[in-house]
Image (cartoon, rainbow, N blue to C red; front, top):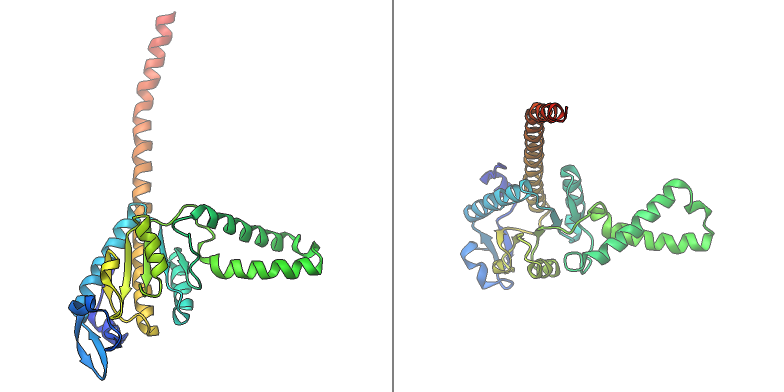
Length: 262
């Protein structure tokens, strides 16, 4: 289980919300008070909700869920890529492509095009193109790479959405709702916690806060992947042991059948 330490939340500035003139009344139960014109988030509730969300993520991934982390704001882009690459999980950090959850077949077509371009660059076919075609295809390649690099190895659509800033990533949230995909989201004081199944109240703008949430989420994903691999190994070992136990019986039955024929 991934640990959530109060001191870490405090040092990362997770408790700093938005200005008091930019808030959603539905976040009232997660707000501790006001200071210098901004809302202060109750870190006790953040700790509680984050711990629950991490347990949920770990359990979902252990049982086979395909997680996707999303945060496209500029200050989050490098953090999301770094943390998700370390955990070996999928991510969207530049631009949400509409239909990624609701029309995955179309997204797969774009992913196939990206992979084709990468193969052409690797095997020399790219250099065989004339300069005009190279320039034209390079623009397409860069756009595809920027938007799809974090999901290019995804064979099936995600079954778990993890978001940092539910308001900014509202299209992703809406798509997940349409597909009944569970959502874990960091919700700041301007957000609507009722739009997601597992809201985590917290600062979704500050770099240190984003880093903390991203690292905790990916830790839970990695732990879930580890447990899933262990479960699969145990199942395979049990199946092999069962097969080995049955082998002498099958062999004996074959001998009996052969003697009866004689």
